[in-house]
Image (cartoon, rainbow, N blue to C red):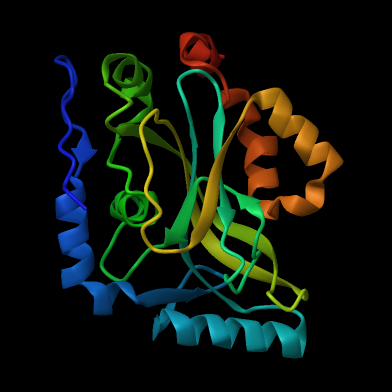
Amino acid sequence: MPDRAFTMKSGISSIKSLSLGDLFMQARNTKSESEKLQYYNLKGELAGVEEKKKLHQKMREEYRKTGKVSIKHRHVRVLLMTTSGKVMLQQRSKWKSDNPGLWDKTIGGHVGLGDDYDVAVLKECAEELGIPATIVNKDRFEKTVQTANTSIIAILRILEVDENYVSNRISSDGSPWVEPNITAFYFGYYDGPVWFIDSESSGIQLFTVQELNDALKKKPEEFSEDIKYIVKKWGKLVKPLEKIGKTLND
């Protein structure tokens, strides 16, 4: 897939961004490291480093034996919407080990060894949906969204880092389990195309706010607990571009 360059209008500076080419090159060069995750005890103290697959197996086995998990690792979760006010949700592949086939946040993933939250988000945007993205701080978010060409680049800001987030999940065999983790939540705007690159998704759908709220009420079993949590906590941010100034200043 060709690298998609992006441009920003004048007046915005000091923003963190990487091209898709940069991100794919990093992903190739650090694949072995990105498959390894740091994990922590429930007090947040570093407990070790493990390969992602082995760590997940360890966590699931502990939950099945004891009904709880005593370790956690770092995640990023992103909710994107268009400037016209539609929420972009990703449908998880039916082959996923957790929450198969459910509608979920736009993008999510792990923070690999050696990465921080921002770098992890930029990588996940590129690797999952082929979206070039940039992250700005809260003070610059509104002006950046209004200035940038969001059909070319996603504009994100961090909402919070929850040190004790609990992700309620459904395994592919239908059994529930709970995964504790440290999660950085992001929100942003994007109007451009997406590509399904890593086969983790089976589709993208745009929901108006009313459509999403109606669907969550009528068919809650079709949505992940993560997206329910995000909409409940940050639903006031889901506004068309012309309303974001009022929303962010509330």
